[in-house]
Length: 611
Image (cartoon, rainbow, N blue to C red; front, side, top):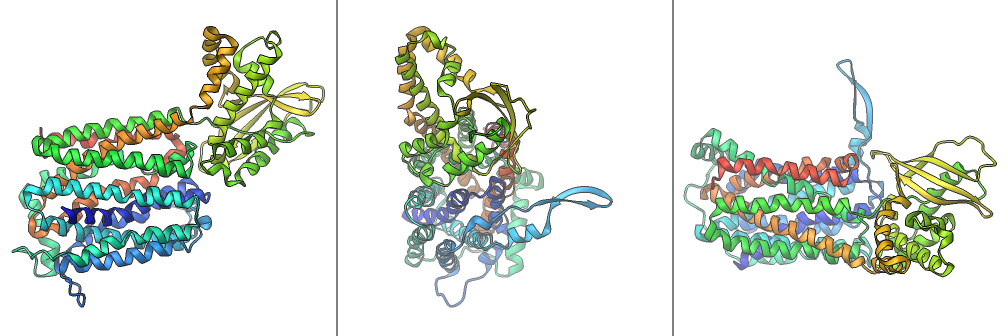
């Protein structure tokens, strides 16, 4: 069982590097979500590894003296160690998704990726390096899966695979937590060097264990290694049942896999810092998954693998709803007007440029120092807003009837509440631009509304209407509406209830209490991720045990490679479109789509693993 810990850790580290650390690295360097989503395509080796798995069943690497399984394990682990360490030498700022162009096909006008930009993306050093890491990792998985199946007796498959899956998850703590925390304090090249060093335990394990004996009936020719695993599988199950089983392996984790495809960019877009993601998000995902995996392995002894797939799969499906809820109540979008001494539309046009430049040029917004982030946001926005009038709008009070001292306290509290919310999301809109609709010349107007559109390539435009008033210091914003929803009005319903029950003093205290509860967002994040991780830990444990049970001992490498390739297919191909889906649908609708996609796999259980 100790060997299963080492195999799981060595297998999980490079995958979580690609799933967690690489997206965070790219996002922190202002790479757009479409490009990050397309980066899932470098994981294609995980999907197609069954194509070269017969080589590992048939051939032993010469000159190493380690045997059939350990030789391949050692080679791939050495490549991973060097490949991960080398990643830090590159800059991701020049990485961009292929540009869509219009062309013709059989006389029809079509939109397709421009070949020059496709080649530039595919040939970028980061793309090639990550593809090499994925190729070595997928090949390592073939060897490790076969090695583990051959050393575990059938009675220990459930527990042994549960331990392997848990160690696999624990390995994610390195690139998904430790490395993210280090990234706030060290250059990225040092972060990748430290991350690479965690491949050494797996390499030491490979040289320390014994090679399992070759099972009678193992293929003696390359042709037998290629043909016999598939012939045996389809012959044992029949063509129809075998195809249903393969479809089940594809669909069972489809919704969950797509849901977490852009997890780290989602946490960043929700306003969480790199350190918060490293400490809270990743740990909340790790330990519940470990607990779920251990409990799943134990419960499978009593439930059996079939019933475990039903029960654990249901938990896995329901857990996706937590992400939809988190996105729905996530940090509000903000836009910042700027500049005085200009016409209202020019005033707004200059707003995003200056305010966003002020914030985005300062990495304090990315640190875990909330006070610095709020101060930075305040400096960028304060001179452009009439916070007295904005507070009056939000409360619905007759402002002149409120004494000056409560006015000041209420305005200061509301001002601080807005900064708390805005500081969490302002940095995420650095790559957006604002276009205003020209206003008719109205020099005598004291109040005007400027209609603007916030835009970014590949994303749905956002309508922002700025309500401005002319003051002796120039134009000031007293309200803004985003897609028709007024900022002032959006607070009024909750404020009205507090005013009714506690008066102005009660509202002031309630707002101050909200400002102190940043930890609630972290707690909500931890609970959502933790519940999802429990479902994943349970579901993965049951699925891995099911796959191991389905293989024939003589063809473990090829058959397990086929099964795990199908399980990885959604993560690679479908997840590549995740960035485009998010930018089209928004985070909330994206997670509802993931929830719907989780049901086909559950329905197939009626045929492949009846209760």
